[in-house]
Image: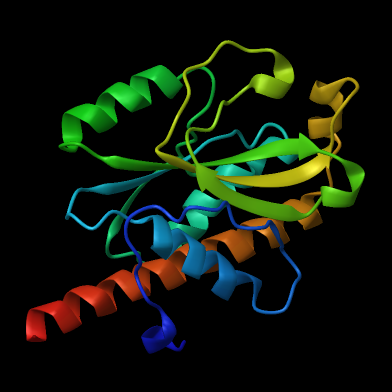
Length: 200
């Protein structure tokens, strides 16, 4: 990976970046750049909350990303939500309380699946502000995150529960792979940034 090509940029970028499709050329590189641009300058804990459940194919995007991140030995980010220990509707509030207890002023990145227009299925967007888990299912859950990473896994508009249940696993796995690689690139960039600052 070309770590030196990253440039951490502070503060928040002014314009929301365009979504990236998981199968675009250099998709993970673009995601890595965007994630890096949102990382705050001061050294506060950076926590990824990967929301979802493996009981629903479409909703498994978050836990898949979390599990892939643990496999990649991420150095600078804390990860909550994996296939082994998912963060979902039943334990989301408890998890957020735990994060606040374990980390001082954490910067939280929410990773979640969502539904959208047919032409946007397979796209990944990163933006300021929280994710609103359960919105497609009309669930009242707390908003999560200083920023969010959303992957559109299927079409919205009708019987969302069944749409999520019948989402292709192949698509979700490939999207999770691209997202986790993007986060890994941002992790490498942050390590590089810390190392060069230490040397200077």
